[in-house]
Amino acid sequence: MEKIDKKMGEKLGEIGCRFRSNIENHIKDYELQKEEDNVEWLLEPLDLISHPSDLVLGAFRKGDRLGWVYELYFHYRDASALYVPFNPPYEEYNKYIDIFDFDREDQVPDTNPYNKTMLVKGLANWPTIMAVPKIWEDLSVPFTEMGIWQALLLNETFTFLPKGWHGDYYSYWYVFSQDDMQGIIGSRKRSWYDFDHKKLASYLGSQDIMPSVNIDGDKAVVTYYFWTAWGGLCKFRVPVEKDNESIIFGNRERQTLVKYDCGIRY
Image (cartoon, rainbow, N blue to C red; front, side):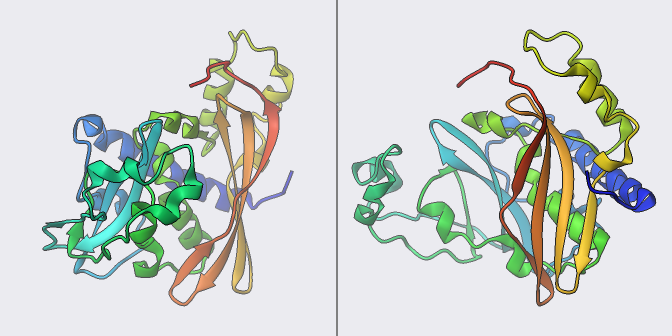
């Protein structure tokens, strides 16, 4: 396991706990809203991240009838037009593409261009998702350990918000504190799945499971730990690059430390 700075790991974990608690306090009725045009409250614990004042951070559901999660995007404060990506209408989408056959995407009619005067409603599928720009081009993120970590938390928002069906495979319980680790161990005391309880318990009290950010010039690697019912105790390593005033995330590398499977399949 990678050694980390104990004090910094605790500081990063504390921000992680605040970010998670803030979301939990806001989403009690979130599943009843279906669409959310303003989720600026996500940034309340993330004091190092900023964006232009004429923009609003919003969220829309992405996926299909087999499962969905939330995606973040920016729109102007006075945005009122609804994004209608298809011509013919969205209801006729499945005439051109089947959710099980993405090779037919070239048969989908040209999409209308998205711009920030538009709000994304309903359940967005391909190629709608690709037409809406990622949030990072409009965010200012200091290339420091804390700045990168706060951006990583925002990038993980979809795992904290409500999900639909197959989207629940992204249900993670992050290790931001020793209490988190204790909670994971306690919840696994009674389980039908035969796994290594002692190995899981060995991580309790270890600072090596706290999040870390290692910076080398204009590149960095973020390491953090989480529990999933469809994998067990895992570690993610995410490469990060500085991109002017913002950053770019690379592909996550996942390592399973203690294997576990709840046995549920959607």
